[in-house]
Image 1 (tube, helix red, strand yellow):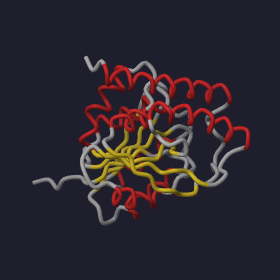
Image 2: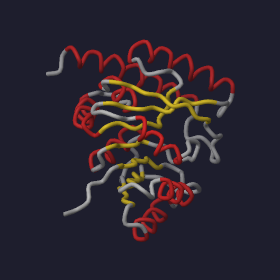
Image 3: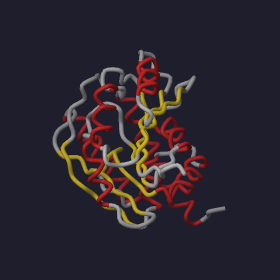
Length: 232
């Protein structure tokens, strides 16, 4: 009988070739006492990320990767990884090492019952002042609609019992934003606080993409509220 996977870690990859080896090693070390899987989703990255992922997959049995032949964007790429995740708990994590993978066991300790989620609230100054102000303003609007704290980012864990609903809503929403969907349909949201590191690589987000992400987040928040009232 195959041992049940306790934790799945899903990571979308786009221009993260410099961090992949360290990120993988740190996750594996952190989850040494857990039956786990790491699912990298290469979002048609133009660097050599795919070559690195192929080598990691051949070296470590707990590492899997998906290769997308067109760029879908962070949210839809993550969805592809979620579709094959088999863990009882699921972690979504960026691939740039701004968030510490060593927090995953702490996230796991913060979830106790079904349909719960736990998010990392970001501390510290990890981007320019103008970007921080813009981010806070947008996320406070989202908080009013979804209940997700404005300091919560894209590093979170949720119980796999939520996964079918998350994927269903994400497939129907024109602009899915997964952290918001998870928050909307969680029975309880827990938070832990942690400093976020500055990116070791140039950001893939410019002003235009940040505005687009903001529109997606607000749209998705309203859509989740609508879906709760009109699930069919």
